[in-house]
Image (cartoon, rainbow, N blue to C red; front, side, top):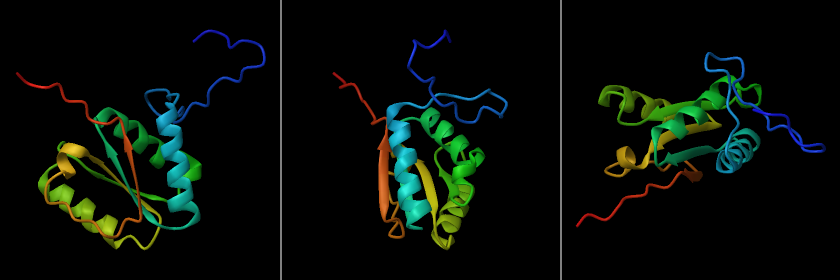
Length: 134
């Protein structure tokens, strides 16, 4: 990255101490982080973040795990890259968490048969775009 213009602050890098060297979050991610902090951090509620792709969820997960402001918030993953057994375990742990937890899931994986009444907040990152088939 080049130098920022005078008077413009460089964007905050999240996870700069992990192997991939950090990332500058998108505006949607920043809003998701703020929603997590409000719902899970301040109120102690549980939240589900739905993602249209796993890459965005990977970055959000990294921030929730590695950034100090999220250290008291549990983070659980529920997507097609993990086995059904691991998904079930993550869901049980999310439901059993006493307070302040986030479940990260893809729309495709959670779209059928997932019933979660414990979450009081949700967000969607990167809506799924599907081209019409002819």
